[in-house]
Length: 275
Image 1 (tube, rainbow, N blue to C red):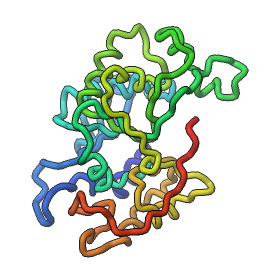
Image 2 (spheres, rainbow, N blue to C red; image 1 turned 180 degrees about the vertical axis):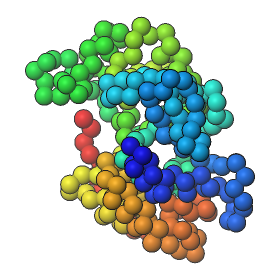
Image 3 (cartoon, rainbow, N blue to C red; image 1 turned 45 degrees about the vertical axis):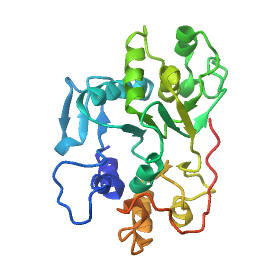
Image 4 (cartoon, one colour; image 1 turned 30 degrees about the vertical axis):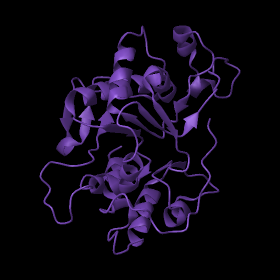
């Protein structure tokens, strides 16, 4: 919904677009980070909304998410010069400077980063309480396996540009796309992954026990926090901005002096167990 897009822009997306520039440098179209909201249901592929809305001619329901994400991958690989792609949701808060700092020492090729799920059984039984949402008999039929290949959870994962292209290439030859998007991406890129970085300290979920305000206030490692309400998105932006210093005058999520470790005591909040 537009209300969520407005909240995401205000909370972190617009600020992330200026990361990497020296302080005071004018916005001239060059940036370290670009964000796009991907919307299905369009008659044709086009950009709108000032350049951050990507409309695609694919269905826009949950069970069609794989088609939507792969179509976005294909457009990005064809239309944008980039090194890494972060796929996340519109209920996530992203600490942009920390994301760039996290990626800076990592390989430019074959990188797959996120919160890892391994040895997950594919839901095929109608008796399963998860069947309506997570059923994936297509995966078993296409790949001949009842266990998913290791994959990064869909709340937020990073692919290097070569893996984005690899996912598009492998998806193009499939007879159909299984509906569970994050698990499918893990399978599509498996042959090209050189570095699989499991980062549950950085890719987080808000849970009843770990409130968003507490994570944003005390956690010095999180890069992405998922499952936030509109109020929590705004609260995280305000909370992190209050944590200012001479080195990070706008707070640690918009710090321009990247690559320097924060001198803060680490307070870690447990990631939500994988589904």
